[in-house]
Length: 480
Image (cartoon, rainbow, N blue to C red; front, side, top):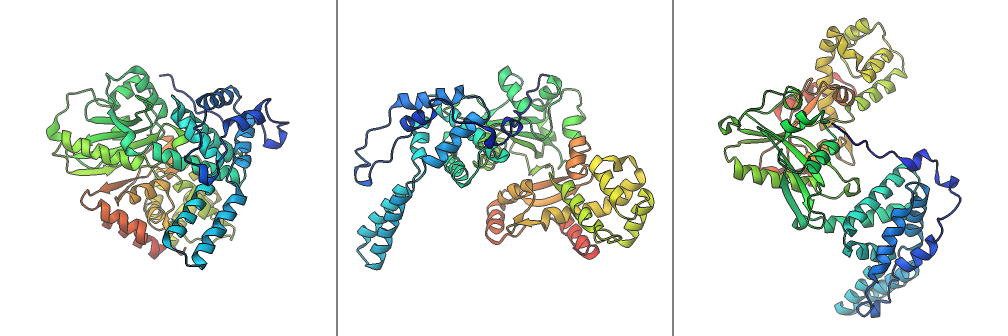
């Protein structure tokens, strides 16, 4: 099956911005024509609308530029030279403070605050609004933000102005891609070939191997849904794959690897829905809240189609666990013989098997997935890796919330950290990212709202007895 490779980081490959000798011809004039000036506050209602032709001219000019330094230069200048007018912002802020100090009537204070809000708008926001009204404009803005994010990641576009523009554009896209404009569509084997191809190409969690594999993923005991936008009909924005089973799955191999012969679906066998993959197809929509709404809509759809379903759960990857674990081992091997992750008996067995008491060999085996070739080492590592993984998901934090991004996503949605599964994903990717482990986040529909409020408000994680028992073992046997 033909697979499209992700676009390379051309900006990084061609070198940093300082190697770029100058702006493409006509860029300065184009920006002056395309970005509408912010009219004075008093005349904002009377200002003429921006010319549609100028927005179309900007789109043509931008798309004619080669990916890399030319586009990076345009985005950098747009962010730096067409942001908020700081003089007007300072003047408006001073009037707000003056109105408060003089305790003027509420109407005067509210008008001063409205003036300040108005002048806080960057000038390029007007350009983005203009482009969003064009036919195909939303698609273009999503592409432009993908370029901007790629440039920020590679440092080809840098600085606070570019980061601010990225945030402004993300917020605008969040409004344009709210649930009222989104359509839920189900993918079947009868769906258009180009849709099936896009679903296959965008699968970021468990790659599709061939057309037989794709047919299975949209066939019996499987569901596949995506969101499209009313302005971009038929284009998958985010895709959710579901397995319909009789219990909560503990292994992804049973879902995407061990493919039984195609059969007619027996609804009496279906009591559980497993969300096993969710993939964003448009990188320019990162940070736009789509995944949460997609899961909620799919749950409602499944409840209508299969009201006998009793359990909704994920079977999720644990990206970053292996990297976190190897990092801990590295920090400990700086002091020779130091061990704070394993019990003394575990460390003695590991050292005997690897022939290395320093931990360097273990780190190498974990990094290369070679440890699973040894049945004895796999058996010894089973208990400590389970409790370390439980702590990684439950106890490791970033600003008080779960460090792991997948955990943070599902916990924000109100799920319960339900079960950690040993050797849940034995693919090279699964072994490399999480030592083969996967996790179930279970959605108890009547409790999701309260769980979400508890996590977002008090940063408390709802977890099952299995997970809490593993966390207790970690706290008893580790000295971190």
